[in-house]
Image 1 (cartoon, rainbow, N blue to C red):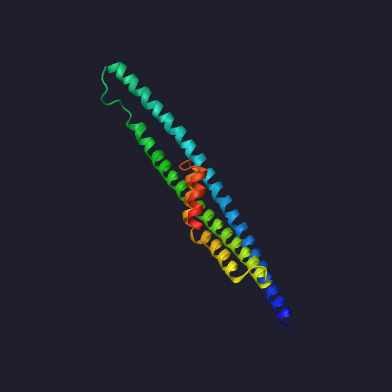
Image 2 (cartoon, rainbow, N blue to C red):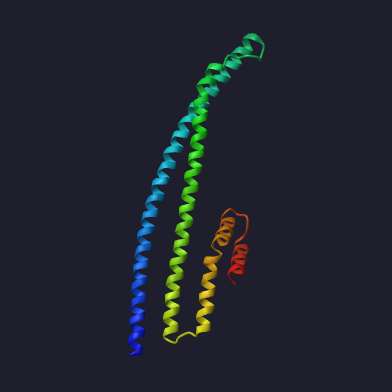
Length: 190
């Protein structure tokens, strides 16, 4: 009877885990679609910015030509008559700044969504590992002490998620070496 109850408990646990994994997969797919939409927005904004840059550069060229023309004609470099070009250029420069701010905000949003996805993945891995450990413990394969040690080790990855992510970014940017990265992460989770 005790064996039947243990099997029943394990079955319920596995059912809940399967439901949790299905929910996580569904959530991850929705987040991936959202990221794709945000990346399309960035692409459109960057395209608009590039067009503005071309128009701005054309205006700068016109200013330069007028400057040279006036300088040659008058032998002076005072008022070169570019007020009209500068007036036309002002809204384009303003829009370019707005686009740059929008791109930064969207990139921050994407970064935040990626962090959420990474945390979700780590939590999912934790739950799967916890299930394996519980199963091994219930079957008498590992002791309670081994179970607690292994679960504690896995928990440290979750608890130090932000710091581990920061260290990985330092490595990606070439600030620290692979050996330094591994040593720092090992120190955190040991």
